[in-house]
Length: 120
Image (tube, rainbow, N blue to C red; front, side):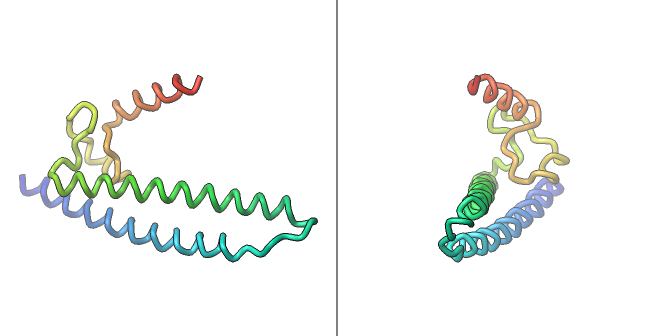
C-alpha cells in the first residue's frame, strides 16, 4: 500500500504543478486577448481569426484546469486513480500520461463512443 500512496502523492504534486502552469498560461492568454486593439476595416478578418483562436485555447485550458481540480478533489477523498464509471483502478501508465484522467481507458472509449452517437 505504501507504493500506491507514494505514487498518488507524486501524481498529486504533478497535478498541482500542472495546474499552476496552466493558470499562468491562462492569465497571459487572457491579457493578450484584452490587449488586441480595435481592428481597422482591412484587419477585421485577421483579428476575428486571432480572437477566435485565443478563445478556443483559453476554453481548452480552462477545461483542463477544471479536470485537474476534479482529480485533486478525488485525491483528497482517497478515490484518485479509481475509474468514476466502473470503480476499477485506472492503469498507472494512463495516469502517468494523463494524471487528471477520471475514467479507465475502456470506460473513456465507451464515453467517447456514446458522445459521438449523441451528436448524430
